[in-house]
Image 1 (cartoon, helix red, strand yellow):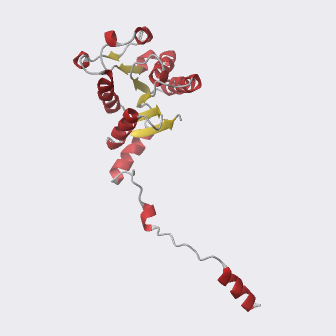
Image 2 (tube, rainbow, N blue to C red):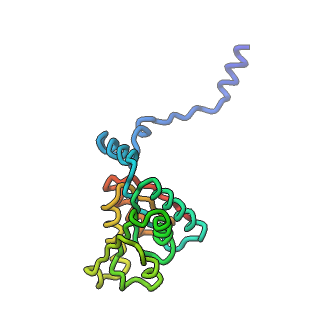
Image 3 (cartoon, rainbow, N blue to C red):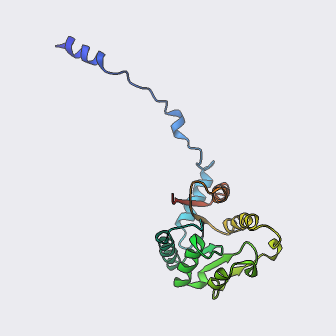
Length: 190
């Protein structure tokens, strides 16, 4: 009987040894215990400054989810920081915050209100806290938007970003937030 069991064990496939030394570290973990403690403290704060940025090209269902999420975050006492936008993520964030408490919304524009399309200008009516940048008036919108995203991230504790895998500008913004030890939540929509 023992010979039969031994022959069955010999026929088993060889086991694969996986080194576990490399599994104890992850590329995106904080370098120190202090950084981890800071991130935990940010998460536990009762009221945070949350940046919401993302793609302009969103299905209406995604826009409704962002609007609902933003409304709930503001009702919990958080301040929402976003940029202008006639459609997509920023517009949904503005609508959600305006429904709940306009005083808990800060909109940072990449340039001036006058440089925004008329539908964006209309959406910003009644927003009490708008930051304009006439110093970026001569920049392309793409360049001004990159600078604006950094300003938004610098002003927040936490970033929520809605993007596609191909969005280079938003991926750069997420990397910047991570480098600056912000709590980052990313939703991929593709």
